[in-house]
Each structure stands twice: as structure tokens, then as C-alpha cells.
Image (cartoon, rainbow, N blue to C red; front, side, top):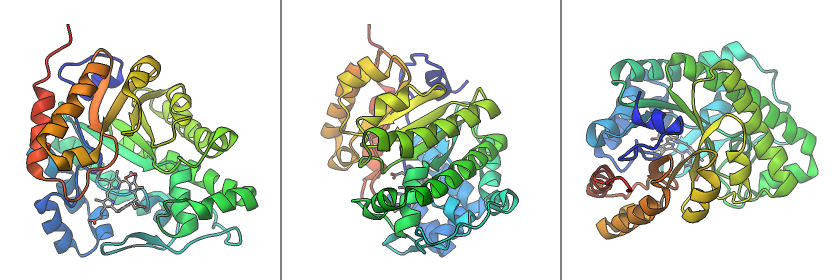
Length: 344
Ligand code: 1CP
């Protein structure tokens, strides 16, 4: 069994496994080369040859313990029929939907047919990699994906979806329910294609508190976890409720969640005491530390290992790797983690 799967099964593994969120991407010259050959970002995602190659690039360079499917959380609304494009250097764009826009009926067959290139990519990754390297499938959580569907783009203050939640909660519930159902189908198909682990990215729940967090984030994620556990009880699920401090303990207590990915703001002593007793903790190096260099990386690993090494811990960043990250710094991080000695 790969080391990351051991950790997600609650074991303490030395040295801890490591992979990085957004480990495939623009900081790698081989990615930039293939991206410009492909034409557009979505062309890369929907071509199994290229998506497999891009997923493997960081494994070849750094021998990470896991490869993540190369795709994006926004292929789900695309497969549901919403127009999606990636403007060069500007991030994702969609034709926004609002309370007056009727969602078409859910056509599971055409939804899954649209995403077939990703399932083929997962199949090829699982065939190509040895058992040492796990394959991670993923989706965005309904609130996070919905925030892009409603606004038509990334919105740091989440104003459009917050306003919809307040002015027309029934309309938003329709969108969230549809995304919950589609995400279950999407992740089950990734697992059937060979994904060993799945991660749910809830990147934009920091504006949700109390009952709002429960309704729009906790409940849909819980439904997805329950359905995945019924479908494939042995596949571990990691959830990343980025910057949702009230949310972390609730997410860690969902039965069936094996790992929680923590952002750089999370206090490590708290994570060790309150989260690690329920789940494996994944994280949480600040992506900026990886840009700053060896001293910043060493001190981040020192703090992390002191706090988390006595429990199940997967080394990762607290958010995605940044495009200006020097490759040497990633090598330094991997070496530093692999040289960690067990706590006595
Ligand atoms: O080539 C390019 O310039 C495109 C950049 C890029 C990449 C490499 C985007 C656009 N998406 C991705 C890949 C991606 N996105 C992966 C797979 C690769 C890997 O991890 O190695 C994954 C898991 C994601 C997940 C994703 N996309 C999230 C959740 C995680 C997070 O970063 O919070 C979110 C919010 C997105 C939306 C998105 N897609 C792309 C960008 C630039 C964004 C963020 C836009 C914004 O800030 O609102």
C-alpha cells in the first residue's frame, strides 16, 4: 500500500508522504511548453494524452507520493451545460446563472460522457504509476463551484453567491443540490477508473458561519461523503475547507472523512490536538515560503514536524503552488521532508 494511503488509514509513517496542491502547472517549463502546444487550458484537460503527461510531469521531477488528475473544478458546470472558457492570464470565465436562469434537467449520461477524457486520464495514470504512487481524483465542493457559476468568475468577496443565498435561497438550493448529485457521479466515476483517493476542494467557504456554513457547505459535503462511502468504502476522502475556521472541526467529524487539508492560518498545536484525533492532517506550508527559499522552507518543516509528526500527517502546502515558485525550492522541500527522522 502506498505511504499516503497508510496515513489516510490512520497510520503514522516516517518520513511523511508529500504531494503539493497544484503540483502540475505554470511553475514547470515542461507544463508551459505543452500548454502552449495545446492552445487552451481546457484542451489540455480534455485530452487524455496531454492530461496524463501533465499529471506525470511533477512525479518525474520530484517523485511525489501522489499524482493528481489534471483537470479543474469548473469542468463540472461545463459538463452540466454552462459555457466555460479560460481567458489567458485572467482565470476562469462562465456565462453567469442567476435565480431567473432555469437549470436544464440533469442528464447523467451526457454529463459523464463529457467528462470521459478525465476518466480515461485516471485509468492511464493508474496503469502507468507503480503502487507506491497514489492517484488522486477531485472535485470542488458545491458552494465553491456554485460561487463561480453564479458570478461567472472568481470573486474574492463572494458577493454574488452570498446575495443569492440571502435573496433567493431556494434557487441556490437548486444549484447546490444539482452540484451535489453531479459531484457524486463525477467522483464515483473517477474511483471506478482507478482513483485511490479523492479530495473535495472547498476553497471559498470563509464567508459562511454557523447555520449558513452547515447548510451550504457541511450538508452537501456530508451527502457527497455518504454516497462515496456507500459506493466505495475503502477509498479515502480528503476535504479542504480553506479558511473556514469554524468549519474545520465539523468537517473532521463527518463520518467517512479520512483527511483534512489545512490552510496556513491554522494553528498547528490545535490541529494536532483537535483534528489529528479524528483524521489525517494534510498541510500546511505557506506557498509564499516555497518562493522565499530554503530558510523559510526549513523553518516551516521544523514547525510542522514538531507539531504533527506524532500523528497521521501528509506534507503539503496550505494552498496551491504559485506560478513563480523556483523549482530548486521544491527539490529542497522534498529532500528536507524525506530526511526527517522519526520522533522518539
Ligand atoms: O495554465 C493555466 O494558466 C491554468 C492555470 C490552472 C491550473 C494549472 C487552472 C485555472 N486550473 C489548474 C489546474 C487545477 N485546478 C487542478 C489540477 C492540477 C493540480 O492540482 O496539480 C486542481 C485540483 C484545481 C482546483 C481548482 N481550480 C480550485 C480549488 C483549489 C484552489 O486553488 O483553491 C479552484 C478554486 C479552481 C478555479 C481556478 N482554475 C484556474 C484558476 C486560475 C482558478 C482560480 C481562480 C480564482 O482564484 O478564482
